[in-house]
Length: 520
Image 1 (cartoon, rainbow, N blue to C red):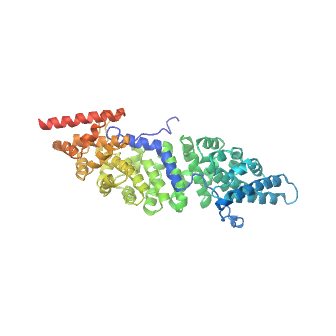
Image 2: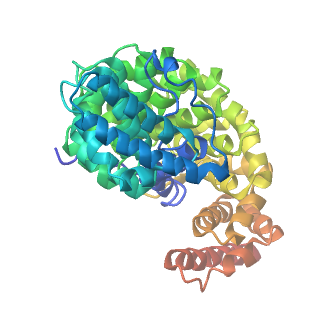
Image 3: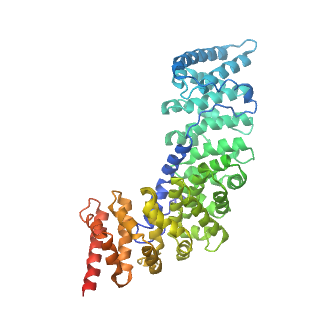
């Protein structure tokens, strides 16, 4: 149905800036940010140096001697020769033809695996692609298929135009992931396709149209560690959007949800990392997937792994997955995190652990998760407010790098307003506001108003309005004046951004209105 994968905005909080925009921007940017984080930690496309087969040690013993810079031309000459020898071997029909082809493939694969910058362009220019496609023909021995797929894997790890050169080979690579294929061959084909999918939306769409999703999904169902890890990585590249159709189709495949939960819970950290990225894209793109996961044990599993892991590579997708889940509508969130529930208490403790981490990215991601929780029900707000996480957030608002401070501002701002009922205006939670201002957080919001970041300035202006309207006995005017907040907001009265300009003018009116009443 048309609305099954539509994205829900975040729940309303104060106007739109502290609440709905926070969730909406994250839902829209989840794929892009996830891609940036992933590429920071591991290449979206991966060169295969060590084979997937258990027998690969017999053929890889000489693959760890990296080429020196001055030997690149020698490597290219060797590649030209290897491609020609492969062509000769494919056309040869005499005795020992199969072993001749395998040896020629192995030599080409070795050269394409040898350097940090493999001679892919040279191989393609020499006509390697059409010959490699021939080597993938049905009925070929597994050893030949494995070596050919390995060559294609490393070609696909190259530049965009080199990856696109695999187009003629894609149907065969997909076919060799079938149930009748040997596991090493299927896994190597999955690796090649993961590299192709990692190149961009156009190639992802081609793979999806050719039926790559189903066989990749089948590969994560058993408990085959290496194979599942490779297939999960390829799947995360294949479904990461921006369209939601593939994510929804994946979660509906029989056994996939159970496999995701099983591997997330019991898999080693490398395997869990790959599955966590699959969950990131499922929950970022598809409400069908989000709801199915929300009804499962995934939150408990995510929280347990957040608490037990110290791996940055794993913690990032775990946080992103949890944040995407609670960025759904209020019905989903109310079933995921129940105040007082052990899972919820453990989730808050996991956020504290990440906020106290030395890793900047963990501070930012955990703040974002908390901002989504804090934009929920009054019970969720009280749960955060009464925890020790608040003192950490207040400190980060004044001491952390700018991007973290902006995320923290969303948390603290959302704690101070109750969700609007119907179309009414959100109401102030005075107790929370007075306490947070008393802890010194106003200065941090005023600093955000002074920044050149319009989103941060919007949140800062919104909080200043809360202070002016909500602090008792006109105390807000004195506090804002003490932090030079008036000058900060007045500079937006003629700002080019219409929304900020309107907010600033309204806020100045509020200030002078409150001030006038005090003088009277």
